[in-house]
Structure formats: structure tokens, C-alpha cells
Image (cartoon, rainbow, N blue to C red; front, side, top):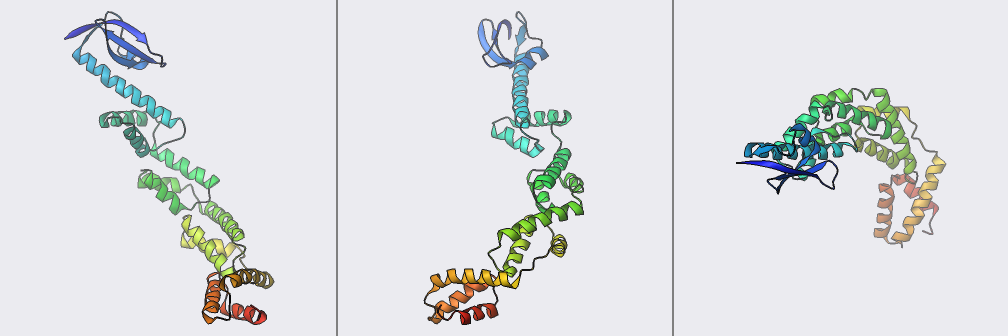
Length: 265
């Protein structure tokens, strides 16, 4: 069955047009489709052409949606596929659009991985283990990840790890030296630094604490805990008090000495 285009009108939405066949509204198309098929008043449209127009318009809208998603930041192929699927784009259309975007260099997982590593090297104190895991979650392949991580050299890794270690050490200033060091090590591990890298970072830093400062920290901590576990004359309460201080990194000897110096507690 063949019909004739009797009218083409612009929609309120820029770049969109309504096609009328034999005086009746038939379908919408984008400006790209209008130009691609050379649509004009008086042109005959059979069922085959109408179907092609519908497919082309679906692809055009999906392409526009994808470009809008890319306008905010770079995306991986997996992220784009998920985004289009979440917007109810047909599977066949998704693969067509992804193929176009790869050909147009809008999608490139290798370049994405390199950009991701560079950004995190500068803005975030993350180790290579975390970056590798995050890129895997984004769907980047192992070869692309390995190539990108070569940008993260040992010198930069240790520099970032050292900054993170120093910040963590300062934030834990109210804890005993041993626990502070544990917190630093745990933070570095959580941020993706390897055991060897952590050892090198520790070798570069001085995590010693002045004995007088350590005693001051013990005094402040013990005085707070005394109020929680009173009366310390009760053996169970005293044991809980000691255990709480041990968990905060103080030695049994230092705790016993504090109790001897504060018999009123």
C-alpha cells in the first residue's frame, strides 16, 4: 500500500517533524532522517519505506540520547549500553548506536581507562588495585586496564600513598601510636595500595610519637573511660576499662602505671 506525503510540519521540539500521509498524521521523524531520506511533500511512501523511516528515527533519537549522556563526561561501552537499556531502547538499536559511537570515537574504552587513571592520579589518592577494580566494574577489558595502569608509575604511587598516610596519621592524633599506625595501614590497603607499596611508604615516614605526647593521650583517654566504667573498685569494671584502653593501642604496662598514678580512679 502506497500513500503520499501531504504535509510536513515542525514540532515544538527543535529538530523534530511530523509527517502526514494522505492528509492523516502518520509518524514523527528527526531532521537527520528528513534529510537522509529526502522527504518532501508529494513523495510516495510505501510500507517498506515507512518501516525504514521508523527504524531510522528510533536510531536517531537513541543517538541523540547517547550524545546527551556523553556531554557530561566520558563513558565506557558498558555504561552506555546500560544507560540506553534503562531508557527502554530496543536491544538491536542499542548495538547499532554503540557501533556508530565507537566508529565516531565517542566511545573508546582504552582512552577512557587512560583518562580515568590520569584523573585519579591527580585528584584522588587511590592505589592501582582500586583503580583496576573500578575499571573492571565499568566494563573495561583487562588489556585496556593494564595499558592504562602503566601511566601510574611507582614514584607517583608512593607520592600519593605518602600524602594519604600523612593525612590519616594526623586525623588519628587522639589514638595511641600503635593504633594510629594500624589505621594508616588499613586506609592504604582500602585505597588499593599493595603490601610492598605500603612498606615503602612506611619506610619514608616517621610515625614515632614523643613519649610525653603519648602519656598525654593516655591521660585524656583514660579520664574519659573512667567515667564510663566507674567504679573501678569493681574488678569487672576495671577489666573492661583496661580492655578499652588496650583496644585504643595502649600497652598493659602503661595502663597499669596510669592506674598506680591515679589511685583515686
